[in-house]
Length: 138
Image (tube, rainbow, N blue to C red; front, side, top):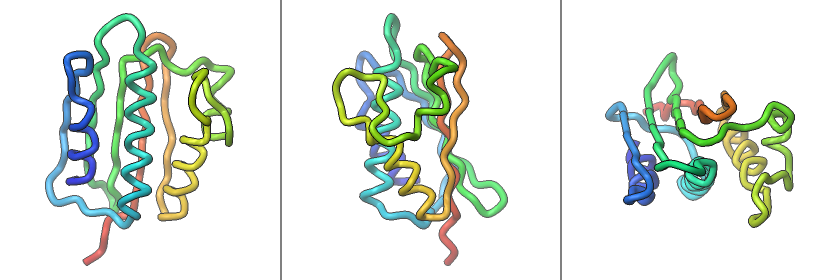
C-alpha cells in the first residue's frame, strides 16, 4: 500500500483530484521499480484521457482471496470499442507523443510477477484499470 500511496500522491494538483481508499497492511510480491513505473504509466494515461474537466482519479486497494486488487478509475473519455483489444499491444498508443510500449510492458511485468491487469471502459464515462497481484506471504 505504501508504494501506491507514494506514487499516486505525486499527481495531486489543482488540475487533478485524487481519492484514495487503501486497505492497511497489504504487501505484494513485486519488483518495486517495475510496479512504480506501471502505476505512473496508468495514472498518467488516466489524467491525459480527461479533456474538458478536472481529472478525477479514484484509487482503491483491497485484499481478496489471497490477492491484492488495485482499482484505478478515471473520469476521462474512455477507450473506444475498436481500440480495446489493442491497449496491451506493443507500440500501441492513442497519444501522438510517447513510445506506446507502456501498457504492453506493464502487462508483461505484472504477469511475470504472477498477477493480472485488465480494464473496463465506457465511452465518455471513463476507464477503470484493475491490477491483481499475489499477496506477499510472510
